[in-house]
Image (cartoon, rainbow, N blue to C red; front, side, top):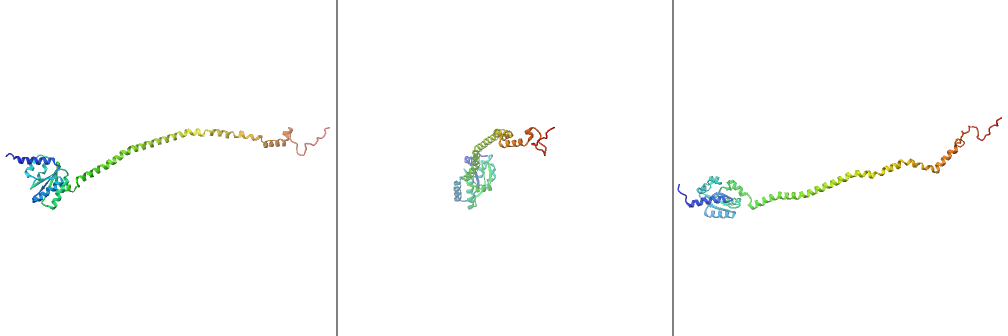
Length: 250
């Protein structure tokens, strides 16, 4: 085998280095495009972060041989140009799709992102995605929502803990006051036995009215009505008079 020319070796190394350093690459077939149309396409892709280069398929096959992009070997048919992407792959995919709508001669064959190979339909899906900045903003918003909820929970933990401790202290204080209540009850009811004793002794003090005039009058009447109590003898029989003189004895 003849030694390859330095020009070819340089192209192979360039393709290999660019595939490894790029964020992605999209392979297209440009058959039928004019020089002016290719210039317009390069300008549109440059605005989206792409660099459009035309290489011979044989040199590209040498560049990808044994590497992570070896699977794009089957896409290297016909006149092939590669759009190397630095940045947003979806922006370059969208620029290619929009250009192909007005220029059907441009055919998107597939691409590669990292070590993953993309089909033509995958490139169309990428073209439908929002711009990278929008995706990053949406992603940041999706991350911020749980973080805000987490921050709210973290702030609520000390507050809820303080509320819980306060409620526990109040509950224990209330329980202590309830437990002390029965001990105070006998002291509150202590006068009750004394009052009961006074009430029980009421009959003794009830004899005091005997010194009243009504009791003396009742005693005097009983003494006057009972001759037995006065003379010490039985009362006289009926029909006789206590003042009748007995017949003189003979």
